[in-house]
Image (cartoon, one colour):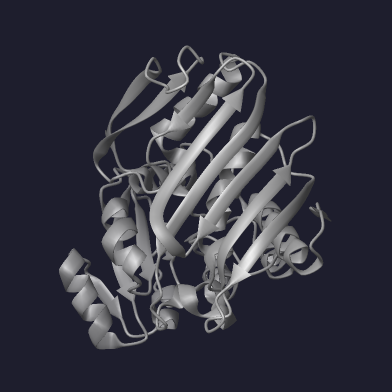
Length: 338
């Protein structure tokens, strides 16, 4: 990498999440600049580049990876291509920020252990960089909630488009991989531990064959439980609640916090069952995608560190694997730790 104070990014594909949310957020990062975007169609790449003011447009992913002026790659490709293209980018000497989930199953994610270790690979869970999430964990650590016993979460939306990648089972579609990974991240983030076993109840769409609804209990041991509901065919909703022996924290719009807007959390010590006496903490407008990109860029530049690498992503996949095993067996399934 040249002696630049900014990390030069290449965007791997013109996927909607990249175009609408992540790429513009990376462009706002003080230590980042987006210099190239690629698509399998050169005209699409050029259109996307012109729309976002990106200098270079490539008609293949391989061309972008071969560009020596690119330091880091953002990989928002469909789930089944995450590991393959992340490894190719890594072999080309690029750092990689890869969309979640890192893979479709843990055994595929483990291939990332073969990546060169002088380049960073991180799964793009932007929520872990949002001030709202960091403050909630600070409150948990402070003891204000007493002993934290439960994390409860809901994440739902309604999407029945047969052409949407989220509804294509063969390439990693379905609710658990798309959004179930977020409640799992919440449990791991706030308990600062790994679940030992899980049990799930899963409904599948008869046409798509994807999991359209899932309810999960994850046992973290010592009386600590994560419970969550995810669905791709319900009214849109999302919530995270952390409950302890003395109080609870509720994160307002915890997963898709509006970019560039103020956010809030509620701290309730049980004075009133309806929560009307809860303390409301307001956070200044921020963009969790920009916060994530900035943290990753600073780590690349040697000015910071990130705690979420390949092993963290593999542990998350082990939880998802156990949930799918429980769907098949109807029983508690141990979360592997290899």
